Length: 131
Image (cartoon, rainbow, N blue to C red; front, side):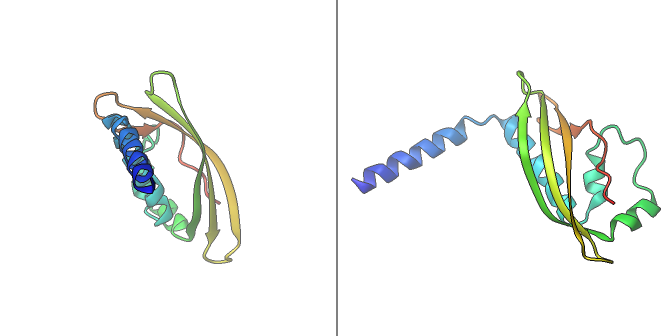
C-alpha cells in the first residue's frame, strides 16, 4: 500500500513539473539569479536586470553598496497578469550595514516583463534604494 502511495505521489509531482512551460522555467532561473546577485553583493548583476536604469552603477554607488549585506530575501507575493507576460512581485529583504551591523527590513515591488519567446525577464521598476 505504501509503495503504491509513493508511486502515485511521485507521478503527481512529475506531472506538475511537466506542466511548467519553458518560459516559466526560464523566468524562475532569472528570478533566482536576481535574488542570488543581491544576496552575494553582486549589485552590478542585479542592476543589469532593471530595464529603466539608463546608466550602470557609478563607482561611488558601487562602493557604498559594498558595505551592505543582504541577510534575507523573501517573495511575499508573485502575481502574473492574465497572459503571463508580466509578473508583479512583492519582495522583502533584510539587510545590514557592515559598519554598524543593525539589521533593517525593506519591502519593494518588482514589475517583471517577460519576453514571450525566450522567457527572459527584465524589471521595469527602479533598483531598490538600500540605505
